[in-house]
Length: 87
Image 1 (cartoon, rainbow, N blue to C red):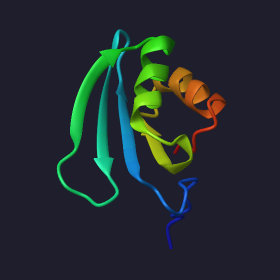
Image 2: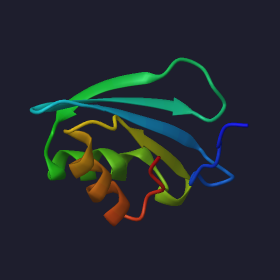
Image 3: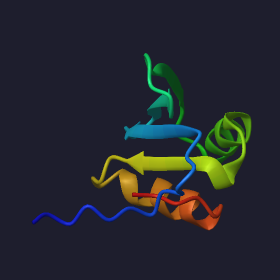
Image 4: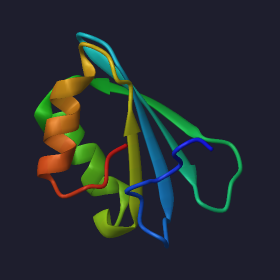
C-alpha cells in the first residue's frame, strides 16, 4: 500500500500549489470545497511569496505543495519557516 500521509491540517480551507521557475512562480489555489482553481503568476521572490500567502487566509488552514525540483527547495524552506505544512 502506498504511503499517503500528509502534513495538511484536517480542516483545510484552501489547497495551494506552486510550480517553481527560476524567475517566476505559478500558484494554483483551490478551495477545499472544490471547483476551478485560481491560477496566478508571481515573482519568485520571498516578498512576493509572503504577500501571496498572507492574502490566502489563515495559515493554519492552508495545505501547500510545491514542485520538488532544483528550484523548489528554496520555496520549501521559506514556506516551512513560515509554519505552513508543506508536502
